Amino acid sequence: MPDNAVPPEAKPAAAHQAACTVTAVSTETAVNKHLLSLRAVWFIFFILSNVLYVLWRLLANALRYHYLPQREASSGRGAYIRRADGNKIIKEADDE
Image (cartoon, rainbow, N blue to C red):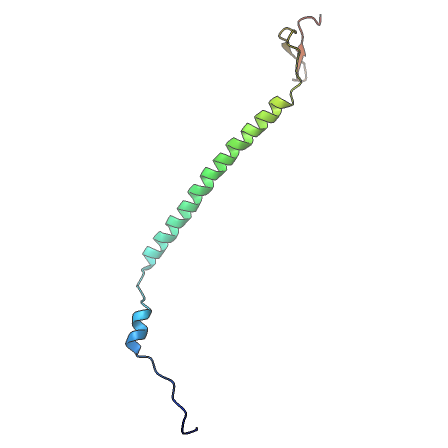
């Protein structure tokens, strides 16, 4: 070892402990915080899924209404007749 070598400075233990404070957390506290986080995530998922469902139904209804065949304004109201297979057919007033 050379004579002019300087040994590394040792940091005092008290300064190191003051910089890294450790707080004791019980298992019960940690579990409660974890469960609260899971509950918050579940609430957010529940609300977002309901919002997406409502938007999906609004879009489906709008598209269904948009793609229904349009009838002339002068034609009378049609009557629904149920066929034997369960499907409805529209009978116009002047179809007879």
